Length: 286
Image (cartoon, rainbow, N blue to C red):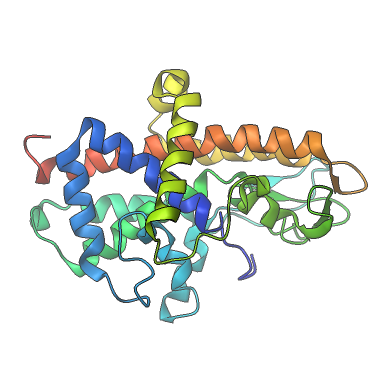
């Protein structure tokens, strides 16, 4: 994929982190406190744009133009949607699954339990970001057809016309922007007003999609299978409903937003669960 791939704009990533935060504060406040402590060990390194737990979920995008661009492939996995049975390349070893597994391994290391280190801080931020990426379906899929025999780069090669905006955008960007149904201009560092917007959206999403409504999904702890689900979601919600003229009408936009609200809530709960699993050893009373 090209370096245009982001995997949620900032609001999407911060919403996933906000949902994880509110879930942890309600059920495992000591875990949240420890996760925040680790994540903020490297605060101040991106012009003070990621100096809170919520904003640190955007850090992996902030550093794309720095020396960390070698982590670019960690944001996604190009599972092929290949209805014509074309020849497709093998999956890259270094992908979003690899990123999450590496982060879990680092945070599970008993040798550094209780310590706050640069490595743990970086990998916790990677975890915050990539779990979000996994729940944007175009980070789990790549369409192969006669128009895109080498793949559509997760929707980055398709331009669609969004009726509600009266303008054309890249298909991937439409999904990154949460179907343009949430504010995508929340300037960082977040002020109190923009923080309250995120908190309200997160509260609304989790009220609509509580843990009980997603119990089957949450019982599956297999990260690889999450990305397979992401491919199936991309087929069902991104590609199959797309009109042949590439116009995003009200019906498509609404079904996309309905799906994304659920998936942002799901991503936030899954992030919270992973943080409980990897940090429980550091917070015995959790």
